[in-house]
Length: 106
Image (cartoon, rainbow, N blue to C red; front, side):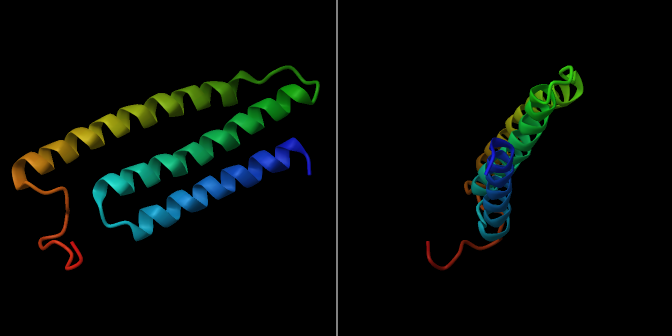
């Protein structure tokens, strides 16, 4: 197993864990964390692809690196907006749940 395969497996694992959390978790904040984990998997994949091109002896391609940096900034901004919306939801409804009734287990 080489390093590129290891990065690809880690990226797939992160995307899978994030997708599972996004589907299973009902709480909006947990869904946000799961979405960020899934995004981190994509970032790892893009980082590995950018490193692979530079390690192959070719000139480093700046496009994957630029896309990665842009994606990180966009993900940070989207997370900040989502947290602001969640805080507004908590302020207006006194709960962080999107359901009309709280789950029976809580």
